[in-house]
Image 1 (cartoon, each protein chain N blue to C red):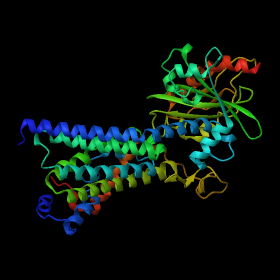
Image 2 (tube, each protein chain N blue to C red):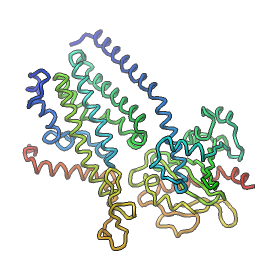
Image 3 (cartoon, rainbow over the protein chains, first blue to last red):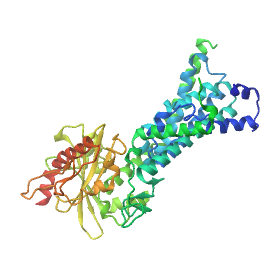
Length: 231
Length: 248
């Protein structure tokens, strides 16, 4: 496996392999569209881009530091209890994120409510600890954590872009298109060329995220045929 | 393979470290959390009279909101017999601070009707016009819903509403909080019928006919909307004895 090969080379260099750790999860090894992990939260928080951004930052923070800490402790962690130890590390980091968010941006905290806490159960985090951080040095594990967090975040933002624009006619809370003068394109205005437009309420509901993810997976595989599972 | 002793030692050290870190961070951030919660609550109260404010709440800084609340809101706690409660009574009911803004309306929901504390705010604008804001709580589809209702000085005409919820579905039940045009329907509706009897606002499925006691429902959110109607009816009736009293 590519991951095992990386482990043999040590040192704080940033070469081809290190770059691969960061870039691969963005496309060819994306946690959502290729590994199909972390779907629940991708459904839940993507009604608006602002929430998705906060969620993405939180996940990058958690994947990076949990990989770093787990990797630093990997020789000290008793194998019998390693899953519990990983879970404690993740839960601690998530609680730190939650407490900080509650202090820094109370509105986002209120809107994301339980979903920040549910990062603990996001399979991406624990998956990376088991698959990578337990066998690699802290520097590369942190890179791998950042890469996977970003890969998750990018897809989250893309889904949120579609859902927010077509569901609410907004972009990052900026009013783009809708039936009142507050919007940039006012579909209710007399003689508006967009008078036929109706926001698609389905986009706000959870099933829409499923459709959007499915279409993204489709496009991704059509673009990179090597990802298609032939078995 | 680690021995059992090593495992126990590792787990103990790790647990202690984690507990200390989290407890420390929690204690350190607690004052900030409490300030944020208090500000959020003030914002929720003021958003019921949003149409009467000079600047929209979303454009105000935290300090400006604190300031506005301090200068334009007069607060009391009343009970269902229409009596005003003293600060000592409110503190005795478990709210440090003793003012209406400290009362947690969702906690009051668990008490029996007669024991409930009812926060009552009077908003006075720059011209000296008064409006009253009261807090109500009820059940939506998945969890609790609550809100602040502003009434004009006659104690019957609704000036504005602001609802919030714990877990209603985004796009459906959550519209009670997010959909401004739905909330705006409440403005101008009446809580008293022509003959002087208390009559709350009904949320009508299939479109209201524009009567003074009804508003449109929300498609796909019948149960949440019914919850709002039930909450309005029960919540506002709790305040009636006090309103009768101040009318005299």
